Length: 119
Image (cartoon, rainbow, N blue to C red; front, side):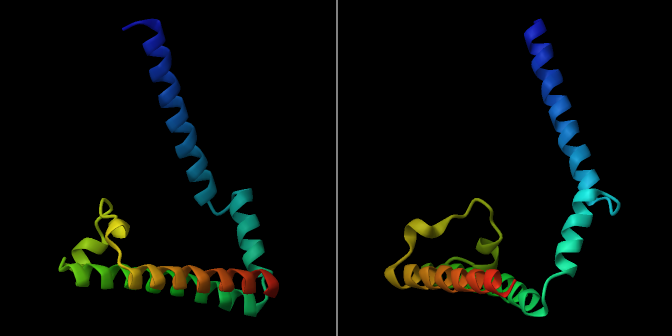
């Protein structure tokens, strides 16, 4: 092994260790970053919290529904296909599915604007 290879491997190990250490520090309840996030959530008005929950629920459910309807249309198993990370069916969408997806994006954008205005 050449010295360059050893240095490259050492840099990769150090980089991975630094990322893990940073993630553990963020997940630790005493970290400054986690406290900033929690303080921000605690200081939100109730309307903003409700809109955030609505946005997360809508984007998740409606987005998955568009893909589930697509899989049903093409005859693939819906639940098996939805949870396959290598499945990316946008190339097979018809006009109706594209319009539904654009609708999901539009409603999500409106919810994001309302969340920003509520704060």
